[in-house]
Length: 366
Image 1: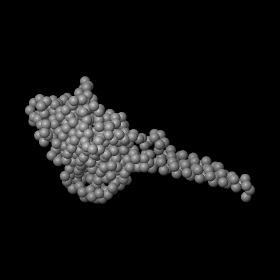
Image 2: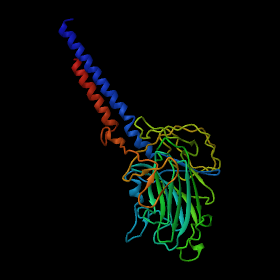
Image 3: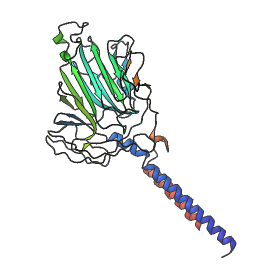
Image 4: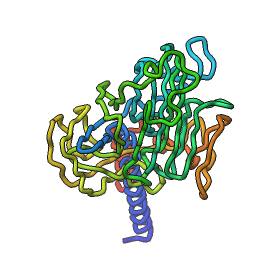
């Protein structure tokens, strides 16, 4: 073989290796970039109360932040000091709990009462088990000298809501796609279980100003009644597979979660929606009684960040806010898993790119 032939063969070999390397990079990226979006769409959560398990899916299509969805507004012709983005699901004298899937990830939302209805209520929330890398994105109410109070720790909150009618109250915690938690406990007290009952600003009798029902809402529109005298536990996972835990990817986005094996004891289970569990998990079916099994593999996504960020809570104890701004456990950096190759870079485009690279390499070998 001549020196020229050997040089050409070496050049062809290097071209082939470069083409293969590029193909591997493209294919490898597909396993990360689109996966986070699919996982978030298919995420399921369980709401456990005593022996009853209710499986729910998030509300929202991922197009808005949770702040935009809730749309807390202080003064407006429609209503004051209220959520104007949830009017289609608000219910009079009803407290709601649900998960919201926004453009900034998964959030836990509390929503009380309905705008433009005459009577108010009082309620308190003792929330624990929150991921330390999440944040309180919405406080309703949030204005100076408000009656409501929000006291935060790294992984919990003590909240008191007081309403004199015509308005909503609530809150939203962003960060449910985090790997830093498995179960959140929400112990909500209503009516005469609250020290401030009866509230001095009410009109009408105390019995007129009471929350009458507590529900958990699912993404398919279904609702399930909760026991107003017992706390609930909210976890990623399914009633058939048990509690899952999110495992963060190398970029720390919380995407592509993997479920950890748990006991998953869920007697007397019911499902609020017949929907898919996270990627690679079996589809949950609606049954009244199911036997819990070891946790299956789950996949989810969380793109942290958003339009509003919160200050860090004190490590030494609770941090109270006075309505001048939200205080949370952290201010995560906003990430967008679709930016790696731009929107719409799907499997088909990747395969074409691989074929094109291989064709170029083969042509140069000839």
